[in-house]
Length: 222
Image 1 (cartoon, rainbow, N blue to C red):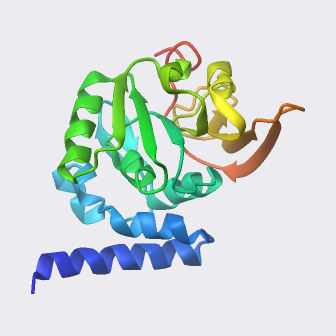
Image 2 (cartoon, helix red, strand yellow):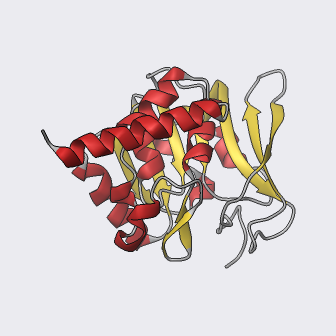
């Protein structure tokens, strides 16, 4: 028996149980969270904390989000194993790996070269091939492969980036943290879902959240 593999499965099963107890109900999302270990996406010295309910630094003043917020954003995206999803802010590649279990194709944009390159290695090491990477200003999206069923933004923006709405299909969902002021302390943010409708977009407030700031044309200056 592979003791390490058994231990990993136990950690992932426990994680899914914890997420379920905190209100994550989509069984597809819970299964996806059980299928992706977090340790490979966390700095070696922090791997003992990989499953803690806290964001952890990954370098370049960026973080890997806590498991619950990853699961919640996936759930709000309404995954059905089909179509394309756009992720803004690749980070360590963890969220993209979870999304790879929920959508047919994942397109992930990161403006920090070193993070994108490392994330690619992390994702490919798990044998995941349906995640595609681009180094660019994420506020512009990735129009080449639009429209998307969902767009998930892993950084807090001052307002909803118009290009990301434009790249959604009808009925598509944008999940984005919004902040009233530059979130240097990761405060005063709310998680918003925008559903694209021809008759008028529907905007929903899904409560407080904490993210690093989105930088670039549609975010905050550095």
